[in-house]
Length: 439
Image (cartoon, rainbow, N blue to C red; front, side):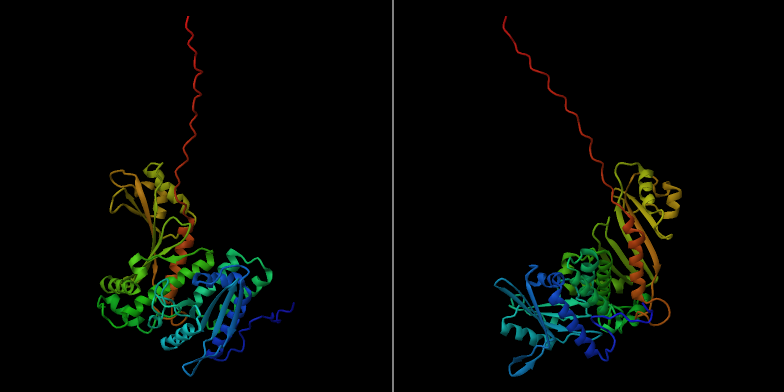
């Protein structure tokens, strides 16, 4: 094949001339694939109440027009999932690029859906919700007892779901798998308008500098926006890790913060003002512990750490050796290890390289057996607001790179200690009973 030949594509990105055209093309491409690739439509819509049956019929329409109070209402699309006697219907609103969802527009769609007895309105945009189960446009969210619900899917979440299906879970039908691959290729192209998270917002520089200098107040204009963008960045990284590993990576939040995004944002702002820090926790299936990330704006460092339980069937130095052997060929050279005995608040700390040479460095003065090990890696924080602009790494890139490196070089290499199975005990057969015979 000639190297100058261009492979034919089902959904070409060439020729997109405006943001409106990008939105229309992305909507049409997505809905067309959803009508054919049943594993993707089931994955996206079953949690919203649609049938998950493999043989359900999925119908998708674009540029639907309704009359509401004498005015024309034009959602970007409509999806109908039918199986047996049940039908689930959703109106679709799509935004690409930097376009944001309009609360008034969504309210009219919810009213329209209620009048037509549709089940929900689904929004798709580059906005990331403040917490799982919440919507990035709270002003439009209907009451909990409403007959019509409002759901949101970020483009990052949608692409991640598609990649997990295509690369990890698998799609049995060859044609559906090819169609899904074409959709992924299209949406991952920069011209599609389905962007990654690439901007910390217009308040980033002012808030960053005030937090670094210790002059940021909790009521500072822009601090709340940075707090919300921080959690959006963490969830974006979790979604990307999920696409790469096939695992359901999530940001861990306390129950109170998961149910109340404002309380979570207030806590982030307080930490940012009091300590100049941004903290988060990622929970990754099949790992030995959570991945904790802390960005210290005052020292300009990104700190990643995890804590692992020490084995209980070894002595103090044997426990250290058990850990260092798992990391000898993979972990970054700056990895620091802190060991703590049972109920100890602090313990000795040494670099991985030093602990490999002398395991006694991680045994405290009282020679107590370590109960846990905390592993920590530090890297430089990028200062730039936007990915790909300016000199050096952006803040977003530096955080994403640090988390990915820590997972690849540390967390993915660790195996949890498992107690050995107890040996089977041999039970002696009872002696034959002797019969007493009189006389």
